[in-house]
Length: 210
Image (tube, rainbow, N blue to C red; front, side):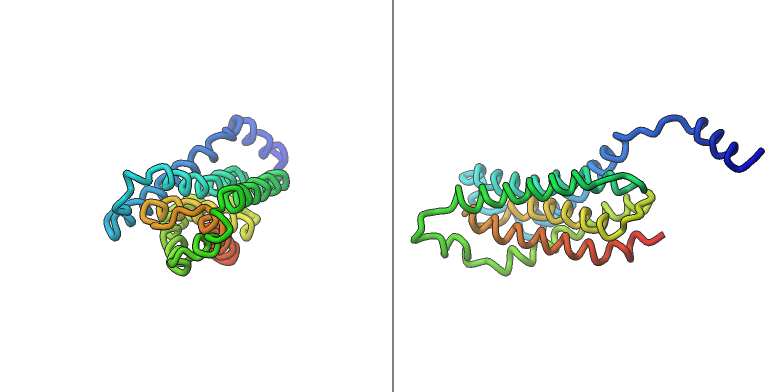
């Protein structure tokens, strides 16, 4: 049997690939990473003391963060297999993130005289550093799942993992973050997620190398 014929036979026997399985498995890995981040917050710091009274604000911050993770999820799932286009998805994810930042940063900004206080919030470096730290467990889980697949665009795949992990880490941090101003959230949560994305792009080729 010739090589081409053998390939055709193997391809026919393998049956159609389930395109949704990668998405679902990656979503499960993301949820596991989020769970680890939440447990770290709960056991190390605990949720903010006024969590019950400010549950709506916490939910808004968590939703802001979840949008970034959700936007990166389909990109990461597609990049887990070679030869799959992600151009439209990247543009869509960028647009979603930009709209999210603009809405939270400008439409929900406090009055002019309070803008600086809301932006700084007294804990700028803490949010910027803790979110990547909480994103690390999620990144480890997702990268471990990724290594079982066959990504070829390693830098872009790493960036998508970083964006997902950053969003998940920010969701966990929302449980303890004492600043509720959405101007602060849009700037510093967004900056931390961008940092995670950049780090993912840098380490992705090394971690995911075949």
